[in-house]
Image (tube, rainbow, N blue to C red; front, side):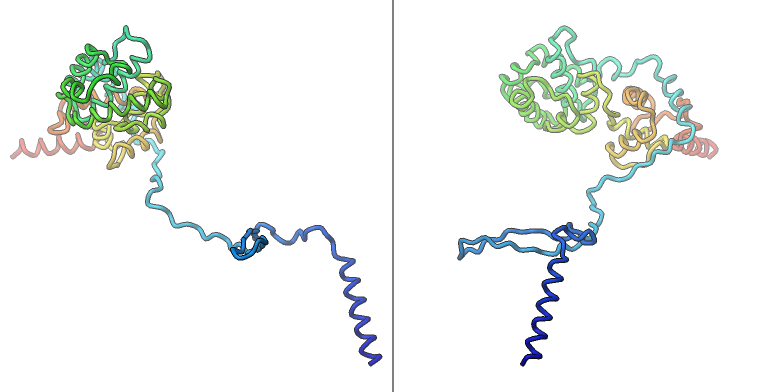
Length: 307
């Protein structure tokens, strides 16, 4: 019995010595971030219970299908020569876009905020609509009073009668009416001044937003890629893309920023006059020996002539 008592006394003494040597400072070898403290309440008790859980490392997520594609930053061969040739072919500025494009639709004598709204509305109307028709529609709309109060006041029926020549005019009526309400309620009666803000408006995507930033605000935020720019860029071999937005991202990856402002006007006019969707006039193009499509078209034409 005495022996047991001595052993117990010895164990207690050792425990006290160990306790006195323990530091109140956290052990630096322990990663505290691997634990998380949670507060849980027992529904049948007024006491709050604390629970410590071990936080397992989060496994890496699988790449989402919604993640943006990576785009090349390598400039294509001879792109500068191709661009010089485009400028040469467009030096007269006599395509429809040069005199009736969206940047020509605003009333220069109107207050600045009205001009900006007119630029935005002209872009909204321009989708799938030729410049000649779009310009004529905008002139009619300006006669009515193309300002914020006028567009808020006009009925859907009246607006529809004015813009009827534009394709998809019924959808555009709804988009315009909703847009002017958003501008009144959320943007202090002026159009948004950022690409993100513009893209919040119904019917406005990146192409319209970037073009509007330049036309309305005088800022080059990106390349406005419409069907002409998308088509011609692929024909030239500058991009290999399926959507205008992918084309924009690819072009912006290697084209110098100081050129971004020129791309839309150059290519739209070129697409209206020579590089048309159907039967492009490759024989009259200065780039027909540099463009993969031009080389193929001329080769096929020579083969037919031989036969």
